[in-house]
Length: 341
Image 1 (cartoon, helix red, strand yellow):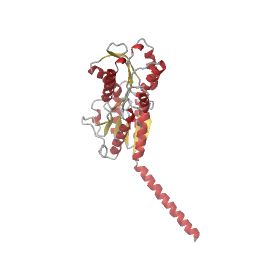
Image 2 (cartoon, helix red, strand yellow):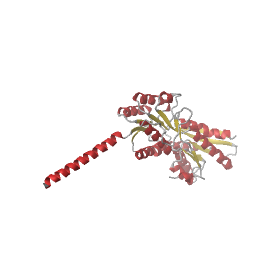
Image 3 (cartoon, helix red, strand yellow):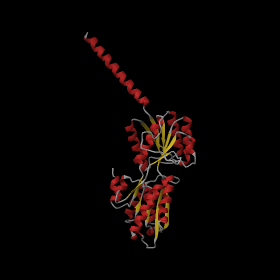
Image 4 (tube, one colour):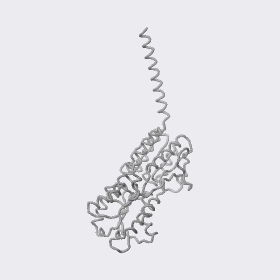
């Protein structure tokens, strides 16, 4: 009798465990799966801010996200999207390598009937976002970061007349551009300098250098080369289209024992430390945290068949671009502590 009771108890426990396993499997089967990429893990903003935020925010929302490295190759990204489609992910969250290739990715998503959220790099082809009802974009107004950076530089230049090293009334600058063709790189390059012109100040570009990886090493190498060039002693201002390149430029300046005003974009933690130490004059918050959260909020709603902004704090722009745009903010020596984590 004792053995029978024991057997019955064991059978009951087995039944309970099977039910629990079934429920767990059910939950997993119902879980939203997101196929995502970062255009290259070599980008310290994308890999250091947006990737971890995408992962942690997805975990908090109870969805599964699979993030792959496209290694700066659009062809590789195209193949990765094909794999995601074959695996029947519920939604795609894609950081384009080449903004001009958006049409290819959108066509793949449309053919598979999978919602698509593009983020950080906006499609450059006119009208391509209208080709599929279930594609949206999350990012920024590219020009805004350059405008804000330019306004900071103009104000500081006027407040520091000794920055005009040769007292000729002209702002002699060098500029680390970032990735050629990237909407942010192109807009920042134009708008940051335009702020001086709009303020009635003369400018002279001594050098400009692009870098597809926006890298610290590139910033260091180019700044070191510029300092030893024929125009090295004429440089009065260093403009960087991201913080990563600014970090390299700061290293080169310190190694050469030279102090110059220098500005970046992104407001990475290291940039805040450089500002605190007086080694960097300003940056612009590129809010990767909220870009990541907005991209996932839209993706989750799309996967559930809801209006993409339902129950969120995000709004789509009214210009027909189907975009959520996260604003930039100026970060200066007077307010940088507000942006500490």
